[in-house]
Every structure is written in C-alpha cells, then in structure tokens.
Image 1 (cartoon, rainbow, N blue to C red):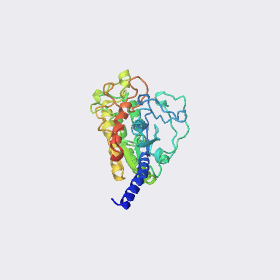
Image 2 (cartoon, rainbow, N blue to C red):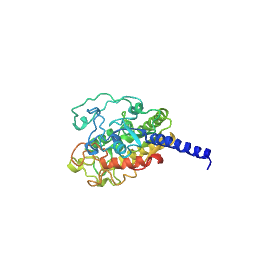
Image 3 (spheres, rainbow, N blue to C red):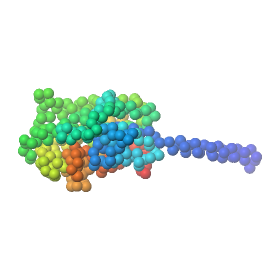
Length: 332
C-alpha cells in the first residue's frame, strides 16, 4: 500500500472517530411528544394511580401515575420526551381554543366536593405543541359530546323506569324537543370540531405523527351482566340506568363516537388508535379485576364516574405505542 493510500485511510478513520459520537449524540436526543386529552388520558381517579402534582401542588387536571402518558414516558425514556398536558374534563375547545378551568374531583351532582376547588385556569393544550414536535396524541371528544351529562341523565331517568324494558334516556336524546340536543346533533358537532382540531394540530406541528386516540369498551354487550340499583354492586356499575339504555350507550354513543373519531382521523391525516377492540370483554360490568373501566364508584367504593383504571390505561398505552412510527417504537 502506498504512502498516499495509508494517509487517506488514516484520515477516513479519524473522521469516523469524530462523526460517530456526533451521530450517536444526535440519535440520543429524545423526540418531543405532546399528549393531550381528557380524563381518559389524564387518569382523574384513584383507580388510575396516584395524582401527580405540578410544582408541588394540584392543578385540578388529575393526571395520575398510572395513566397511559406516564406509562409511555417511563417505558420510552430516552426515545421520547412525553409532555403531558391532558386534563380531566377537557373538551375539544380546551385543546385548541379556550383555556380550561379544571374541576379536580368536584362533582356536585353526586355531592362530591373537592377541597381545593376552584382551580386556576390552565392554558390551551395545543400551546405545548411546537414546530419540532414529533408526535401528538390526542384523546378527546367525550366532553364535547356531553358523555357525563348523558350518563347522569340516564341514571336520573332510570329511577322511574322499568330496568329491563324501558329506554327513557335513549328516547330523550334520540327525539329531542324542548331544547334537548339529540345524540345525532351532538355527534355532528364533535365531527366538525374534531376535524378542525386536527387541522390546527397539523399547522402547529407540520411534521408530527398525530395519533387520534379512541375510547375503550365501557358498556357490556350483554347489559344483564350489570348489577342494578343503589346497592354496592349497582354503584360499581351504572346504578339505576335501565338495561336498554346501557345497550344504547354502547352502540349509539361510544361506538358512534369512536366511528366519528376514526373517520375524522382518516380525513385529516391522523392515525386512529383503536382502543375499543383491545379492551373488549373488559367493560365496567366484568368481575373485579377483569374490568378495565370503573363504574360510578370503583371496587373500593371511591368515586370514579366511569373512567379507566390502571389496567385500562395499560391497554391504551400498548395500543398507542403500537401506532407510533416503527423506527422509534421498540418496547423498552
């Protein structure tokens, strides 16, 4: 080998020594991931883990240690930096338009009062999205639909109904009248707002992968599996909601809401994350330990108001991770 060849080889080797650490350092920089959503993202209940403090204080959003953004942040540390701005009670408007006034665990309808209520405003969730954000996950739509209102109304109307034959809630929200916004009108509003939200997220993060996260299985295929009444078992389900109304909530509310989200994701360049299918047979009315969503109260008698527990969030975390760009989604 000539002198010039040896010199050239030495120069290349030296360059590789310099470049390799730089490339490794660049690869080690975590990608920014902003997690947005409502209580089905944040956690919001004791059964979803310990509440996480912000600056040593509660901010009313109820993010918990067992919620899926925290699970993924821990699982993918070094690969993604997960910035969780989800907040229980958030609507689509709170994601992209308006600051939110969190309510914490303040549920006056059930005579549950949060000692720290009222909480200060929190910014729009989209404010955390930057131009270099690589992933945005968003699990929202239920509060825009009025899910809690629907469940509460079904419970109220169910008190005066035959639990096996009447469907007062379905009738009330199907036919409307006297200013009642029907379920069809509510779903149309969600579709319009959801599509606009995805467009705003895309404008804020042009190169990001946007994950539109759906809702899990909440109501059983067979409503007869749900205990009925203001008993301990009944409160772990849907109290005095009639069984026909439970079927209606499953097919005409949650399943149609997920359909709207999946359609809007397709239309606006986002990836729909199906959480409903992997959580099938783990609805509220399954036996203790097999339920991945809690009912009016959890298995320890604490208020839950129909939200996922840690098992439900674990299933969601797996579904969301599976939807990530494959080059950065290897399980830790």
